[in-house]
Length: 307
Length: 176
Image: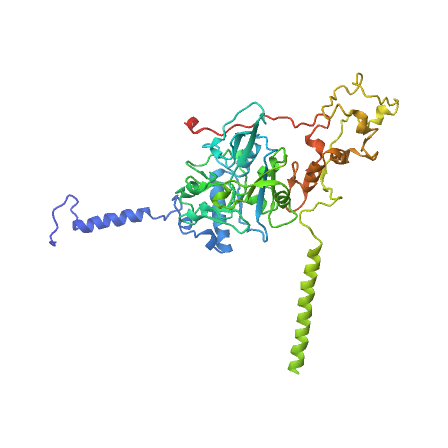
């Protein structure tokens, strides 16, 4: 390379290579977030995995998230990070002889857990089967039924949501470990760690996970401000979400929203490790089964019949 | 001196450990899981107010002689159409003055009406006491609010009324 500098319009005394290096460095510097107005900020970039953070770090992260969420949703959101209660493993029971397919659980869940209304995200799906036909094949079900009144004669209804498996295939396939099983049995997703590859959605045999294809749209009046970091806090575009057994309610001792709203009491919830709970009573006394038992996922969702 | 001290300490520790092990096994011996005792009536429920205009029954029935022949009522209580074992029984088989009457003659208040229903629907009564039948709200490990049978089932026409279902999910073809 000759030390001569060719004549150039800028009359600059620079080699071409030096000039190009200067341009590249300048562009890189311009991308760095030095002002607060940047959408990208260092704290969220350097945030560690939830399971690796100490309680102090989690508190700081939550403060930042609460501030961001309040700005975003124009409402004071309170995010908690309650840990799992000791000696608790949540179990769920669903009475198929009582479910009338009214879908009240679906919409109670949507409201409680801040699911996007447009595009529509519903964690619970209610499937309708004709009595007497081959029904364990879930593809034979109808989920868009719209009769004037339910229950319809000769049909029965089976709601499906995340089964909170003891051996979850979704956790096994996650490339970033953004989803894991908590000690109380709930499979959770850290929305700040999820990269949105949807491998877990492909792995789930129950079709329980939902993806946010666009920024979630929640009417301000219906936003639930009581949230949990791993549960119903307002999500972002491009993350996967699913039923968390209302982690914000159950870790505070309350029933999940779907259990409370069911008008016929078809939904039962409790602690599998407590021998006096209603979930243990029905597992021991009723005709119980679980979906797709042959896949060895060990779901915690028990369907049963009382008649 | 040391030997005596350690021996004494060992004795205390062994005594404590054996006491603890034996006490645990004693406590666990008599308990059977998921057994509902006879007097295990749930503590919290919403008592159903009987029809306010016709309650208390003695408002009118004090002044009338009871005509206990089974018939279709013409003058009063015509809105009550019995569709619940109506061939086998009628009003006076369950009602007696201001109270409800059990088959053994015992009279109970309206807020304990589950005993009356439980006479025939024993399995459902047992399930209700355990919390498996019917709606409950509250805490999964604490206080729960039960509902009386009549909160969901009209005792004269107990079949659960059909509801209008909520909207189905949007079909992918309908998303613009």
